[in-house]
Length: 361
Image (cartoon, rainbow, N blue to C red; front, top):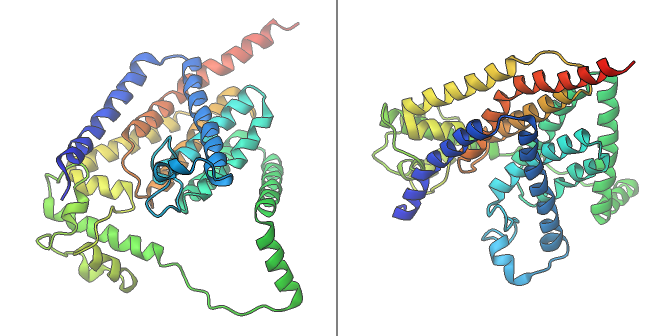
């Protein structure tokens, strides 16, 4: 079972999120305040890079590794975030915060740290942070640059730099594979399709079982792991489960305790109809805020703000579709607040630029 302390912590998570959410709306009403939030997130990313350099690259502080690594001593959790799941999310968030600060302050050398953020992402041994990182970069580029030619140039520079960085950090592996290819000593290997997606699909079907069984009241925060194992929860979705997903579906229905690897489905399965309503209202408000966006000129400050916020939302949103990270309610409140601030930023930032132009002869 789950200890009373864990139950209390789980129950408090949504309330912490609400406190942060209402605090943001109550006390932050100026653009420079929002930029301080980006600055804090950017600094967090830079500190994470330093931490990765000390612990992973140079292997220092052996006595702290028990706290900095996961139980398998393979995945680097970080002392700051305490979990490779959470660290992956904040690698994505910090990357775009650094991008905003670098372009807003015209300190372009800081963009190099956005590229280097791939190292702490790599030490999570997860695919979802890569997904959020690259989809976010594409989103940011399309919104900020707008011009197709500039987007292609940016993409080419990014690919070249990323390629050189990969070769530099994996030189022995690249040399070995290249030598094997040139010498002709290439062995055919059978391509095995990843089972990961189908395993997740089995978990998703089980979450529907829990939703149907507890309808309409739900079971509460963090309780999916308990109810999914219980035999008294009917396997209503069993006839619909694909063959390749049946193993994970059977396992989670009886012995293995895990999350759904989908934040949205787990939230709805635990809070049931109330959770579904809250989730729909949350997504509706996010889309409503982003639909208020008005066209602005390329490279403007408002365009930069918009690109940063949308990249964060889409990056984290896509990650949550396949991730098992605990619900970071304070982060979702922050993203909703930033999306709500888009219209205000669009009204404020271009005006400043217009005033400066009107004073010029």
